[in-house]
Length: 108
Image (cartoon, rainbow, N blue to C red):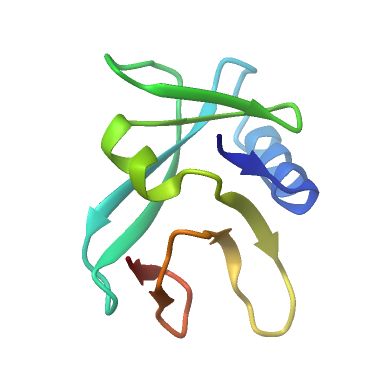
């Protein structure tokens, strides 16, 4: 399962509204190689499901990822912070052994 915090839900709805996206747009999460810790989170809006996509609905928010990315993201929570440290969107990922200082990449 992938989870969505209240703060992430609010910000995603705000972005969706500002860009005049319809309700059929969802959040796509992918994990790619890169970043200072080895693996990087990528977030985007999409409206087309792909073969073998994993689909999750939490907190009235649809999140989709490919099967490989889900192996890294299982039981993670997408959150949003607008505190002074300026994190933006980030994942509370129980599978990550370590994260870089900026929170944009991780390692297992």
